[in-house]
Amino acid sequence: KAGVTQTPRYLIKTRGQQVTLSCSPISGHRSVSWYQQTPGQGLQFLFEYFSETQRNKGNFPGRFSGRQFSNSRSEMNVSTLELGDSALYLCASSPPLSTDTQYFGPGTRLTVL
Amino acid sequence: GENVEQHPSTLSVQEGDSAVIKCTYSDSASNYFPWYKQELGKRPQLIIDIRSNVGEKKDQRIAVTLNKTAKHFSLHITETQPEDSAVYFCAAMNTGFQKLVFGTGTRLLVSP
Image (cartoon, rainbow over all chains, first blue to last red):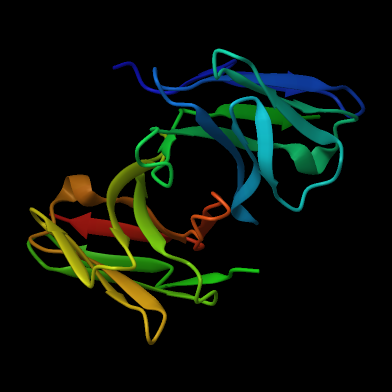
């Protein structure tokens, strides 16, 4: 099976702009989670979706939002970008019979100038 | 909420030696503990995991132990090889919330 894919892989934006990142889970996986990875804060949970419903959300401001489509693909959106939003954004998907196990995509490297 | 501490932050060993990385967690309701390996510029890769109903799990040169009473778990790598060099992250999850809480990572360097 193909692994988790994320697009785009690299993105450069300026402060105040907004950005949309996309994640395609492994075929058959219905749960998608998003994480932010930075050198200072490490890996932090953003949110988790299952069957188009957000089930859990991390401690991030409302500028960070997401959604999941009926084919389990997920997008996350960051509005009014700040310099501190520069990070690697990782998504992970979980198989239906082992929903705690998470397999990560390659990430989207976002740089905010 | 859950907090995961990981030690050491860096670990240098000679090829063939063993390496041990330790993590402690705060939430006694956590019941799933995966370990990820992340090479430079690559995705975190799940290498082994353990659930709270098991005390130890082994996969070739890698083993994980869990002490629920003390709320700590450890990764053991035997016969280390240069390709084991990477950053290793532990994590904990209360599967009722589907949210991984990660440790701060251990940079393992295996010298030939």
